[in-house]
Amino acid sequence: VVNSMKYWTAGKLVFITFDVSPTFTSCTGNLFLQLPFTADATNGQTMAAVNASSGRVLTAIVTNNTNLVALYTYDGNFPSASGNRLYVSGFYQVP
Image (cartoon, one colour):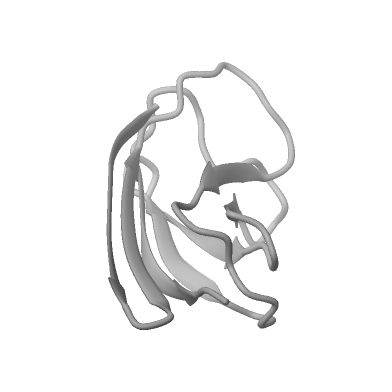
């Protein structure tokens, strides 16, 4: 569940913040969040993310040419458990 998502734009940059509370019991792989606009093809657009419930720092990478940001942990584990609170913030470039 996305508790809130706020964004603002400045030229080709989109600044965004997410507050997310996943409601699932078990999953594997990455957790994807939907962005308001499609990202350009620039490689390596990253954002800051944290699981506030566990204290784990997450990696958030914008998927090129899509409107998705993937959240994952350094060790490949799923980034959250049901009921955890995730915060994501950063910016990305649009075409």
